[in-house]
Image (cartoon, rainbow, N blue to C red; front, side, top):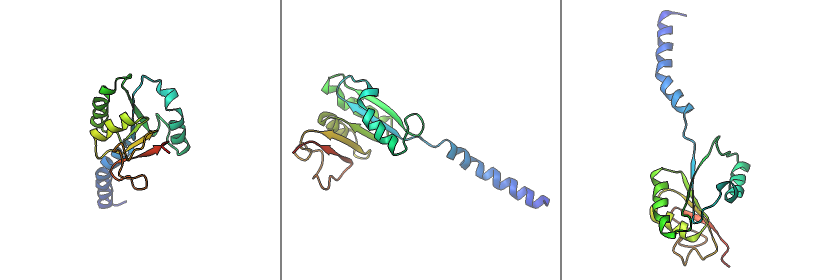
Length: 143
C-alpha cells in the first residue's frame, strides 16, 4: 500500500469513527406506562409486554419501560404524565380514561395509546373512532 493511500484510508477511518460509536450507542425506545392504581408492573403489563415480545421487542434488550402509578390519587396523574414527557419517553401507554386525559394534557407530540371502557369521542380524547387524529389512539370497550 502506498503511503498516500494509507494516509487517506486512516483519515477516512478517523472521520467515520464517531458515526460508528454513535450507532453502537443507539437509544433504546422507552415506553411510559401511566396507571391510576398502585400495581405490580410485572402482572399488569404482562399481556402488553408479551405482545411487544411477539413483535420482537424485549424489555431490557431493545425496549425499556418507565412506570408511573398514581396509587389511586387521580389528582397526581397530570404531574406523573408531565414526568414521563420530561423523561422524553417515546410512547405513553395508559389503561384508563383519567390517565389518557392526563397524558393528552401533558403532550401533543408523544404518541399515547389508551384502553378504556368509555366513549373516547365523547370524553374528548379523539376526534372520531375511524380517524382519531392528533397523537392519541387506542381501544375502547364502549358499545
